Image (cartoon, rainbow, N blue to C red; front, side, top):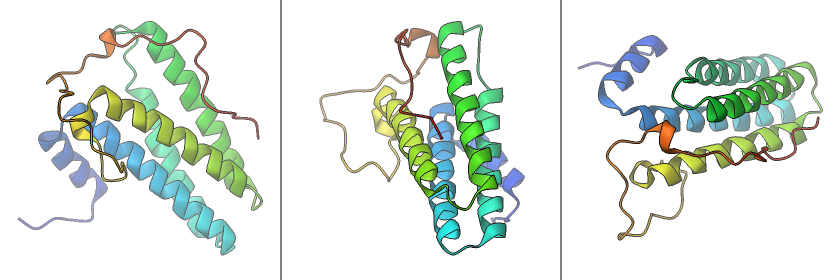
Length: 162
């Protein structure tokens, strides 16, 4: 079977073959990669490349935000929604200014924190970016339900100030 470069076909294939958690981890990995590449584009003063990469990252963030399930866990969905809004604001700032490499680092760090949280929820799905394997005695559930996950009331991602 030949694969196409069409992202919609790639998404369709992933949707058929990957669990929701695996898809979320893949999206976070993609967002991290795009921001890292955008940071390099900033150094190279390649405005078009930076714009395209940050735009792709914004699409991922907006897609994740659109999939939040407020009925399953309103508190967690609200916290993630606020997190995604903050990320989107920072991504817009990166789009508008060549001197935003430090903000790229903040975005990358925050994406890694949330990605790591997903990996901890379902450790056997950790992506290649993770350096350590989960302990063998620690077994993940077959089905992760967001309603079983409790969010700390005082949760706030790392510093999002520009």
